[in-house]
Amino acid sequence: MSAPGAQRPPGRPRPAEFCRQLLAALEASEGRQRRRKRDTTPDSIGTAIKRDLLERAIEDDPAWETFEHWLYARALAAGAASGAVRAMALNILEEWRLAAASPALSLWLEAGAASDDAGP
Image (cartoon, rainbow, N blue to C red; front, side):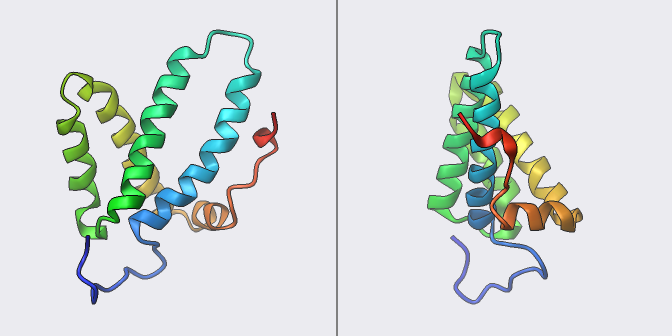
């Protein structure tokens, strides 16, 4: 957790809020996944790992300046499954950085990540 008086970087949500926004976007991804004609078991595993990381970030509410370290620590704590957790942690970190650099992506996430793929 960050200090109560920590300053928010301009235009950037806290990592916990960003992860909440990514969870909404993940719903659309799961809608696409359910409609695929191939075996999506590997996709489901990755999605479950990513969902777990996002939910834990929401719960732990790491500070902006420690978010990367927080993700890295989750991968190390995963033990034998650290490769898969590391891959999803890196994916989240890339999305965090991209959202910081792309106002359009940030606005889309803030608006609820609307997608035609979110249906059943």
